[in-house]
Image (cartoon, rainbow, N blue to C red; front, side):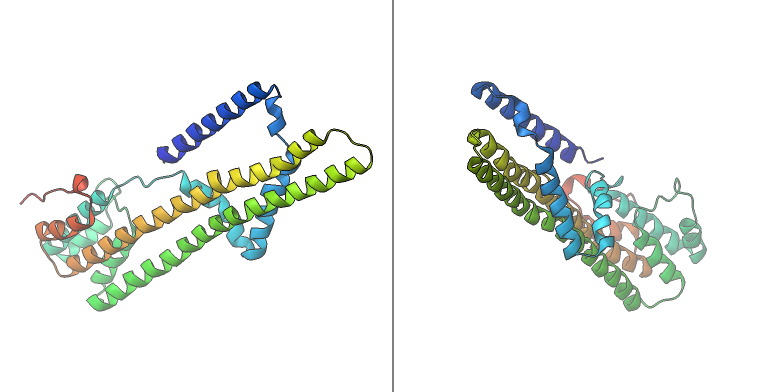
Length: 265
């Protein structure tokens, strides 16, 4: 679970809610003045509809899975990945059979965090050349990055459209307000407030939800690049039957200092 995202949403919502409540008290108006169902439909419905026009429907439906990704973190660290690679290297230095046994082990005995490690080791056992293994891993990493970059673009698109539909809603509200004035309406201030709510919703959705979500996905994508590079380097060193100490020393360069370990001889 990504507690940073959850805490940010809770604290941000609480502070903005408190500010809205204090403003309502100071101006002696009900806080429900900030609630308007039609404005929500215009902003969120319009943004989703425009995004559906810009992307394939399968990509738009993928938004709901993206939300799950935003609130979830990996249940492992890069240090755990290095541990797996070192264990596999030790097994392969003993014999091919030991590596096969390690690959077929239970999650408790060999907890594989990344499918690329297993795929790379299976290629090693199959006698694939090292340059072909490297090409395979690099291609997988490249296309994964393209897919996840597309996810970021979807969220950014939502963040672009939301303020625009907020303005559209405001224009609709202004038209109704002016039409009401022509027919004898006298609550101009109230009508103007309702018209501006849609702009508020659009700015809120873009800057508090969609664009921060896009940045979160972008950060996850950047972290995956490091994982891919670490995995590729590690699998190639397994193929070269390098000692676990040498492998850990080399792969520690990919890790922040707090996650680095020393290999026991």
